[in-house]
Image (tube, rainbow, N blue to C red):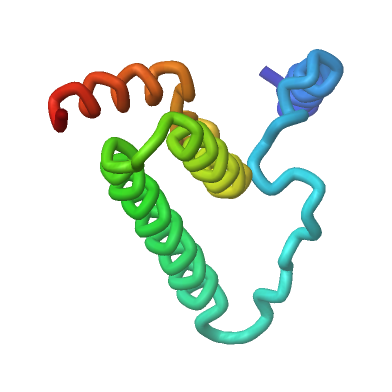
Length: 124
């Protein structure tokens, strides 16, 4: 296949994908590209920063998990609902940064209250 025909076919596939919105929800879309890669070690510094951010997100996700475990000890249903709302806001913040395949699930408030009631009965 002629190189120009191949390039045209690739360009056509990209154009079709753009029209179908395939690139609309990519991670970091709308952010400025950081192209400051003129000095030695730029790649290593960028990779280290990515790893540091990823580690922070994992720590935050673990903290949310620990706080879910504390939901069952709250004294009343209203506080459970309020705490679930707070935790889901934190989940939203984390999910804005994480790639689509690594996002954290929201806490279902109805299921959380059901579980709290079961745990409350066990404590009583």
